[in-house]
Amino acid sequence: MSLIPVDELLAELERRRRPKKPATPIPPPEALQRLIADLHPKQRAFVCDPARRKAALCSRRAGKSWGIAVWLLEGGYSDPGGLSVYIVRSKGDARRILWDETLRVISERYELNLWLREIDNQLMVVLPNGHKIWLAGCKDSSEMGKFRGPKYRRAVIDEAQEFAFLGELVRASIRPALIDKHGELCVAGTPSPIPAGLFYVATTGDGGEKWSSHHWTIRDNPYLTQVEEELAEELKHYGGDATHPTFRREWLGEWVRDEGALVYPYNGQINAWNAKELPHGEYQYAIGVDLGVTDSTAIVVACCRRGHPEVYVVDVWKREGLIPSTVAAHVERYLRDYPKSICVVDEGGLGKGYAEEMRRTYGLPVQPAEKSKKRAYQELVAGDLSAGVIKLDPRAARLLLDEIQILQWRPDRTEEDPKFENHAADAFLYAVRALRPFYRPELEEPKPGTEEWQRREWERERQDAMNRAKKRSSRWRGEADLHLPLAA
Image 1 (cartoon, helix red, strand yellow):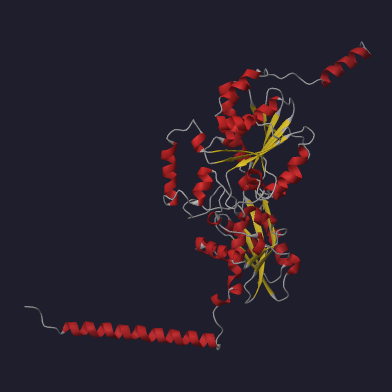
Image 2 (image 1 turned 135 degrees about the vertical axis):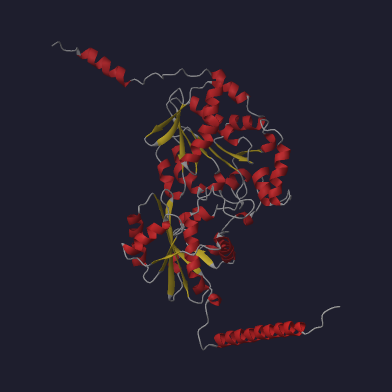
């Protein structure tokens, strides 16, 4: 057997270490330039803006996603083998918005040879030069950590109005990851119901640093026809009122206070409190459980003093993909931490089986959560939040705040908009409803022998006597009619 010379062996190892040439040819620069030239003027201004921090404030159907896709491609072709990231609330939404509806279409139309690949359980759009665009989801603040570490050429947080934790996500996870490559960041979306937070500041400069901001609406999109007719149809959902705040936000891309769009109007000035400052007294606790199989399971613990108006949310927990035994273990832990609590569980759908498992197998004293008249009780809880009756510790209730600060109604206000997650919000509603007789004593039955009980009994007897008198009177009139002479 002949030995391989050392020089040849070293040359072979060096060859293997070299990066492989891309299997598909890198598209010529004119393809990208043609793509940019086909954008409408406001999209093109956004893509060609060299600012490292910029914002896109748009209405619905304005072509925002198309502009973002082209901007990410431009950055990707200038950074072979690098990485950019596109973030929305879920990985499924990221794929639908940026790949299915934009990059895939762009790739076919301009022959850019883009590919969608799953790498380490993450969705990546791979460019011919090896650059990757990570399509990522970040449903709540507990997932911010996964964006730490990589070096990004460009980063986009789309639908920024849906991130109650946007400032923390940018500050703690995204900005440090842009330093190595002198990277660029974009936040984009439509105005949120409350004009506050990083997205509002970035687009207006009100109370902070204004970023390079771009604004366009559905009226600027030349690829849509009969726009005015469509807007007139949408306006019907708002009673034909063109000044309706929700219409102005969604279709004109204007910042306006629209608290009526939120299901639970949280206000940090009157609803925030410190869990270490719970007033002294004897408390009743309630544990609300919203069950999910593929969705998240959420647990919210709240308490109140009997006869006192305030309700305090003291703990919030949420996880997804849990089996019944795991859910039961967590419920048992909370019942142990908060003895003599009322534990109410969502028994809708598969939840009934979970609850029965908790009762029969684990002996947990869980009760079915009250779910009737949900819409009416949401209004009552919203009123208590607006009055400052309900208090939340921003640290302990962080996962709940991530939901309720963005949870909105449909335009007709009949139910919640399904695009927003509401698992912790529902568990919160169950817990507050379970406590309602304790923090709203007027809803309790008065104790026998008390002055209130005697007053109620007297009123009931008086009403019964009046009803009996009405029946006698109607019966007398009926008998008198029988003796009237027949008409000739």
